[in-house]
Image (cartoon, rainbow, N blue to C red; front, side, top):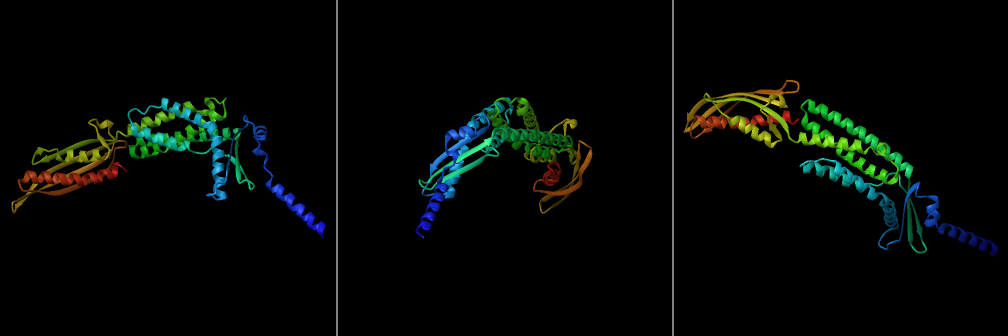
Length: 349
């Protein structure tokens, strides 16, 4: 019986020793031999478990430290690629577009390298936690090369769609379409930085830097052009008791301008043509208040296909304490407010 108890005790001790056995990767020489630098990126971290942390929290913290140690070897290369983009990209004076690209680039630079594996070990005797992060260089190279190629294909497809929208005078939709390329460029910039660090022999055929820069400048140029607004040509013949009056045209243009529209005197350069025929007529004087009506016929034509997108007749009554002329001007201003809502619904769609 005593021998049996001793045997059980020895077995228990044996398994406890096995449970406490440190993994080989804690030894730096073993890591360098089994995970050589020419094949793997790796990172190592160790720290004592914080008394204010749960074991899970401590494990996660030290895993993050190991991943950060691995990433440090490529961060400088990612920054170098970003600097090359900055030197090769022309934003002109457009700070808004520049900030949009830089914000996405900064956000992407915080991303983790794909396919990293992390092993951890907790020594219960001294409460030390160890973490070993590693990733195969060739897996990284294959993954990010494929991603760069896929992103470039997406960008080219988006540019093609945007060009079709521009040609059909859908400038707002074209602008929204081109904005979809910004995060894709940021992903490529990050991937190219990683590849530059992981594969010292990689050439431009693998990085596709020149292609990316060319596409990026194309998108920036198109966005800058689109920010000039939708171009509208006005053909307005508004009469105030026989005399030409600019109240309707000026007020309509002012509101459209506040909503991103620009104006041209060359119809061939316009995206839209607004045609207005309007005239005023006296109504009556009642209790010292003059009233006049303005009747207007409006047509909105898309230049691309010469299609009439909107056509309407509007009549409004205006009032004035001075004369019929003032009442008609008031009516013209009322028509402008109503008209602009209808125009913007079509132009900005």
